[in-house]
Image (tube, rainbow, N blue to C red):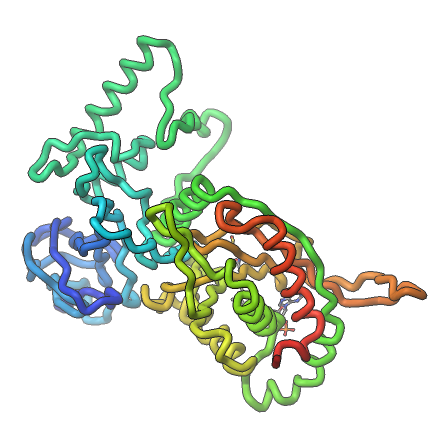
Length: 436
Ligand code: CAO
């Protein structure tokens, strides 16, 4: 038997946050990643998961305490002295506080498409504000139940202290809705009026297995759904002739081995995207949450979608415009390695202006990536193909890189996108431009 302390991981802020809920009590058995407490900052609620499996000996905080990154929250007895400790997990945002601010509200930070990060302070569930605009309080179990039943928490009236929502409130709401719909003979709509997909008993048709979503899967599910519902997407296709780029990469092979840094097409695409964002600043904006303003960013941070065994994560490379290709190659390797080993912190996934999702190593001729809101555009990269290209006199074999650009049509017009995309394709097709 061994005793282990669990503390709060890096919250990405020095401010104290409140403990608003204890999810376990002394004596409870907990699994890795099971929520121990719920914290609430001025901006969001978040669950702190356990890093070890075992029996809770003591909780060292109580509801109402103010805590920081590093505060010990629980002592847990683990089965053996051989630790089962998981990497420090990111806190899991569970709700954005949506009380109407006096001044324009801050723009919600980019969510990792996962922990996406989604992980960035974007909420894992859609903003849940009661209709009167006050702050909504609901614990993880209530939110889980609401998600399972397809209920928008903002539509439910809380009966607990400070209007806190309980599981009974959610059940009562569903009962009322069902009886109301039964009386008018129609299927209930959920969320933003979208009819729910009726549950199906798949076991009736053959053997099935129920597999739980990972924490990252859940964040991806919620972030993707939110972006898809909120952002009017348009996607454009183009191809870049990267024959010269590929020749250059082949020439650099010995240098790559010497430096132990791989320069894949992604490093060049990061650089080309940074140049395009600098020349076409509309793409480096977010729609302000007040709906009346744009936020024009003066920095160029770009997220890269990384496929990991736990799910999709989007770490962010900062100041891409100020970095050279070797730095970018090294940072891609370092961040994707951290992502694949569950070592990314929330701060690694915050602040993105634009995202690149590269499936180039896997295949495919093109796909329509979903904008990682509140960013306004995302670049999809598919597999390079040798194609015959007409050079004015003959067809010549050229290495063509298929690219897609999805953008938020509320912020970007087709003509803006045409200019941005043409610029980006020209940059990547003629890498001499990348140094300009
Ligand atoms: N065409 C052909 N080959 C490509 C290519 C492309 N567009 N892009 C990369 N490659 C090659 C690389 O050059 C490398 O080849 P070598 O080993 O011979 O040099 C090989 O494919 C593997 O590349 P990589 O995957 O290790 O490196 P990367 O820089 O291209 O990508 C990363 C890094 C982290 C983006 C990638 O590993 C990954 O996780 N991609 C998945 C992203 C994803 O899931 N997106 C979907 C999001 S929405 O669901």
